[in-house]
Length: 208
Picture 1 (cartoon, helix red, strand yellow):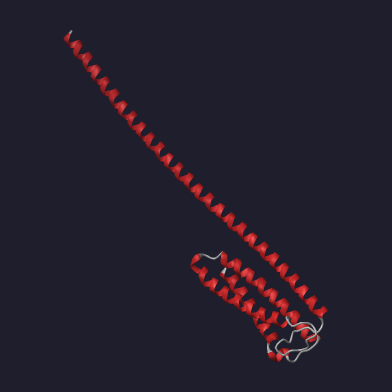
Picture 2 (cartoon, one colour; picture 1 turned 180 degrees about the horizontal axis):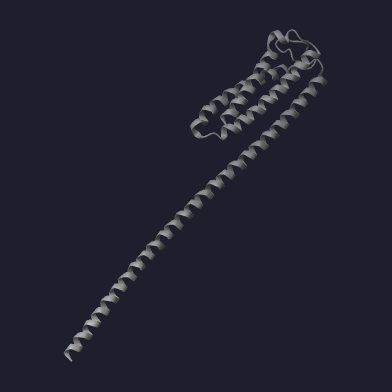
C-alpha cells in the first residue's frame, strides 16, 4: 500500500511541477491567442488528473493501519492544499469577462465569450465525470470495508465454535476416563466379592 501511495505522490509532484511551469510569468507573457488557449486547456487537464490522483491516494490512506495512517494523512492534506492553490490560480485566469482584453495578471482570459463558455462547459463536464468516478471508487471502498468486517466477524464466530467443540471434546474424554475408572473399580469389586464367596463356601463346608 505504501509503495502505491508513494507512486501516486511521485506522479502528483510531476503534475504540480508541470502546472507551475505553465503558470509561470515567463511562460504566460510569451504566449497569446491560440497558444494561450492551448496552455489553458493543458492546465485544466492536468488539474483534473491531479484531482483524480488525490482521490486514489485518499482511498489508499483509508486502508492503512492506524500506526502509519496519520503520517500519510498529513502528506495527503499537504498535497490537497497544493492542488487547491494551483486550481485557484487556474480558475482566476478564467474569471475575466469576455472582451476585456489581455491582462498580465490574468493571461488566460478569453477574448471570445463563445470560446470561454465552451471551455467552462468542458471543464464542468470533466469535473462531473471526476466526481462520479470518485463516488464510484468510494462506494467500492465502502463495500470492501463491509466485506472485510463481515469476514472478520465470521472468523471470530468460527473461532468461538471451535473453542466450544474443543471444550465439549475435553468433557467427553474426561467422562470416558471416568467410566473406564468406574469399570476398573467394578471389576476389582467383583473379584473381591467372588473371593469372599469362595471363602465363605469353604468355611461352611468345613463347619458341616
